[in-house]
Image (cartoon, rainbow, N blue to C red; front, side, top):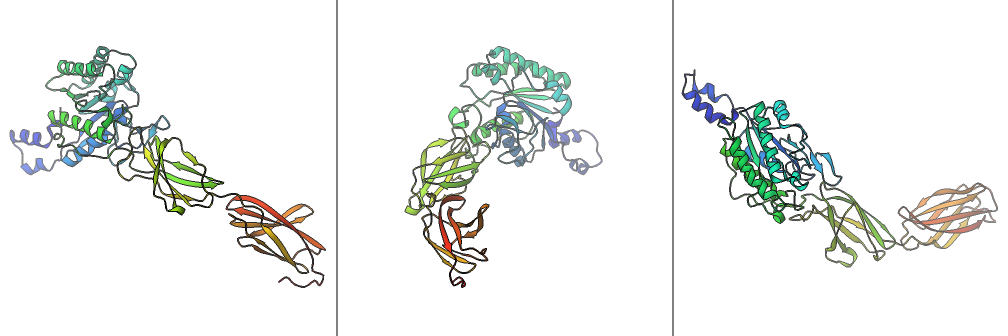
Length: 438
């Protein structure tokens, strides 16, 4: 491979021929190694993931090795809406270029490998395909043969491109173990001194329960293992160092919480939320703050974007938070949404004891406050219907500049926030003396 020589190879070559000065060679930084990643969902990743591409990029950055991921895509798959185009990486600060797609098969690639090499001019192709072909009934031998064809397509365009064939990680699926074994035969037959073909042992030590979030796709721990196996193999052909051991212990599950809002009603509270990206369910945590209860997690997961808790005590303050889940992975550590508080209430009854003191062109209304009332709307009856006079928060309202009449009819409606309760009505006769209101 051309770019795999790097700076060390350049110095060795320079030592065998006359050059003006060593500083002239040292001042030329090595060209980045162009790496084309071809794969399916395991390589593309889904919303909220770091991806093993990210882990591999961080490995090279930490080692000071210049690489350039190339390819026609940068997106993740949105596993919640089941469509492409997500850009919600757990950390987007890396080279996101790739040529992978959720569900892609070796037998039916999005873009032929030869065309990808023509368009993106990689120094190395890392390919991880085949498991979807096996799941749709293709034999291990057929998929291995197609993989050999892919290598031929790459070398037909550029015989100096190195190819890394990554094993399928899902060894618990039918046919995968046999296919992975055949990959070594494909690599041995296609390997050349100028265009290496090697196998990355990405399936070694890979665990269905510990390393995936849905028995198929890698969680953070699975990403680290895949990236390490690929890094080890790339190191063997001169690209960067092998992965450091032991591998880092990274937390799994979503790392951010949802944004939650709460609305209360008569004996219930409804939660509605958005996010976090990639979360497939939520655990609801709740406490009755009025009774100083500790937090408790409800025993079931909630899907969708809303949930209602019933049979609550009106007037009590309830607090809620959500804990996100992706597949079968609960988040490690304290990963929650914001905390919201709501007070269930009964729609307020009509204001009791409605009374009035009248003047010549005014009236002062007073009443007793019903439970759960937070404000009141006062209206006066006219020939055209009820005409609003205003809102108050206290049980008193002064109606000024009333039209000349023997009597006026008023209505006072109790509200709880934006929920209307019942109304009380009263007819008020003008004071005989025609004096002012007090």
